[in-house]
Length: 79
Image 1: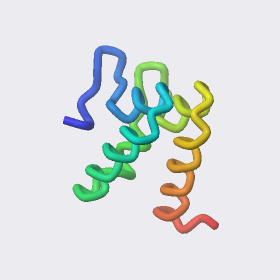
Image 2: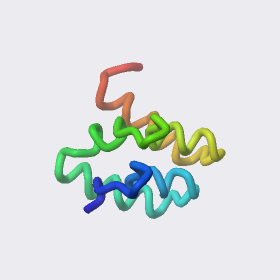
Image 3: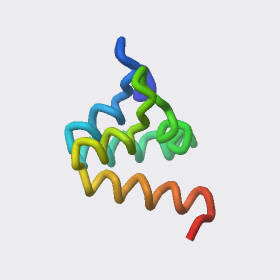
Image 4: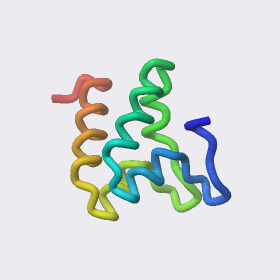
């Protein structure tokens, strides 16, 4: 259900990132990590071509930007 999207292509992660709700974002993300779907979820785009990272950055959700960037660094081996 976490990866389902609304009519604009927004997943729950997009919405939590946009709203700056760190607690909800972390809880959703942890559930996706257990299912090994977290990386794919972070790369999903909505109809505007935005990922959850774009949403968090655009709406000034610094904590969520940091969570996403740190997660992507750990998954890609980028230092």
